Image (cartoon, rainbow, N blue to C red; front, top):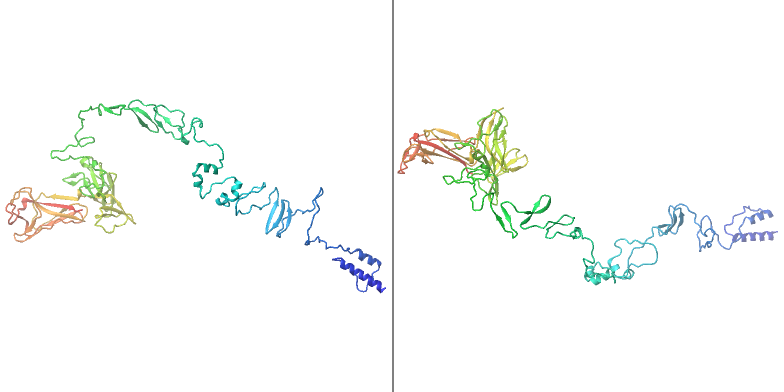
Length: 586
């Protein structure tokens, strides 16, 4: 019994050793199985296969796996379609509804569909370009194929000819036969010349270098018409010339009127403005437009319209710079301003054409031709609107030959160089640069402005006016006896500034005395005693526009004898008049 049990156990262990992964029947120690238990245990065990089977739950093949050859039945190897793995490993294969995929070297290739596997593409070119059989189109990226790769090696054989080399393309086309061969012309026929009658048809348009026309008028002159066909003029007859027409083509015209043009080009004139050749042309003498100016009895030019002085070119000198040159005057003094006005509007007077025009010149610095000046003229009266209860300084701005009234309540500054004031509304004239400036609060800009007078305004009217002397020059001859000793005499010169103003005092003979004829002037003059002399005070500026002088205390006027030149004698004051001259020296 023991021997049989041992044999059975050995047989059982042999079976367990031959079958892999066998399960236990679940017997316990000391259990004696009966026949039924034995039969059940054997039935539950797998017979030895002679190899290790594949686990359907997952396994690794240690040898090749060969599927059955496909026939009419389903394929021997089938991958059930599903979704793309979230982290496929290299060598993974799977199928989705879009196609077949494979994971290679960290890259998913697929889907396999319509003959394309993406992203499979041609690898980067590193040598000559070669061709292989197949129908797949490969795109070569720009710059991959270089001129060197295309010029030699397999590319030449595959293309069939030697292409142009970018490094030596000029030499490739220098020779016509070489260029023809390089372009693949081969034995194709070439035209050695083009016959315009046999090889060209239709009409060559203007845009391609032609005329756009099939016929042209004989002896006509061709005219351009943009991109349209050229237009010939009609054939011209003797003496005709082309005459321009606004926004139209020029037309042949025959010269008519006082002159005729022959076919030879010679012009024949029978008259000029109705006057036959050899006949004097009548012109009026005068100072109006189209008149001939005639010298007067003193061989001087007569007074002309002041408008003829406008637009003087740079470098042309004027009698005085930065002044009113001339205008309406009484006894040489300006008369273009009324003495007062019942309102704050000040309107000039007496200004008209000719000698009564107001002419003003503004200094505009210096140029290549010297002093630069601009001149403006007014031939009719104009107005200023003054600021109440203050002195208004009246000015004119010169522009394009005309005058524009301007004013300021700030007294203008006249200075020899230095810093120009930028105060808003402040006019400053630089005597060195000969230029007026106007400040605007930040800078001072040059302006062509000249001050011509001033006016004192009350609350609602103008109480007094002063017109500045023409050409900044004042001369006054008194009509009374020469002032007595110790007398202060004053008046107004109205130069308009006290900068650079000078003056002199003289005596003019009214009755012959001490050898002096009537009208003769003595300047400078002296006063004092017959043995001690001192000069009277010469004209001085007071408040900008006034002058004053004081005669000596003993003898008011001392004169040497004009006939002998000796001795100093006191003049009879009733026989002499004083004369004051004031001028601006710039």
